[in-house]
Length: 197
Image 1: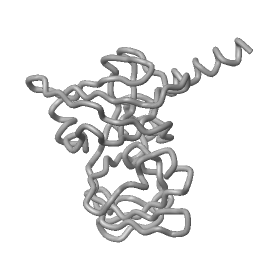
Image 2 (image 1 turned 135 degrees about the horizontal axis):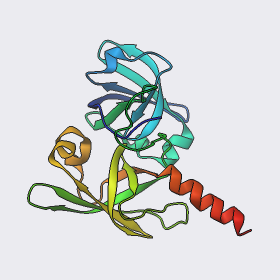
Image 3 (image 1 turned 30 degrees about the horizontal axis):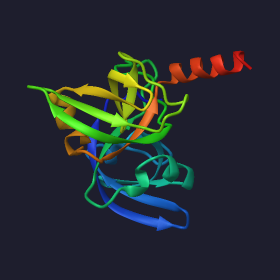
Image 4 (image 1 turned 60 degrees about the vertical axis):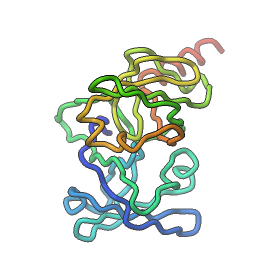
């Protein structure tokens, strides 16, 4: 489990296709502290560390992950939001993030708002992809509060610290992002569906 509070930005140094899988090497200032078999969030996707070599670690994305996220579109030089799982007994500073991406969304607009930024995203319309104003959403692994909510999208406000210390500063109109909707909302929606059948 993660909190959506990004620890560091990593840089993709290698992307290698291996049958239907993709092996990705990432250089970061926490890579040397990682261990093989450890679960680490990369742009919000929970991936298992398969190798560590100095300040570079390797993860493998399988077909299911590649279909539901933007991980398969990473290129050498891309910046990746990296977060280790929350320690037992640690503070939950963001919200409950599983690292299980639901779908990808598209950045439709970025507006600078005198010291902060408002980002607008669209996503496929589905009862499973629900946001509410003042609720939580995870964008590329970052825990954020929904400002505006609609069936086809939402907006979030980003403070300068988040802008500078995550890959949000690289987003522009058309950028594809990973979305994980709030797990509590997903359970409520599923309960309502089952209670009505």
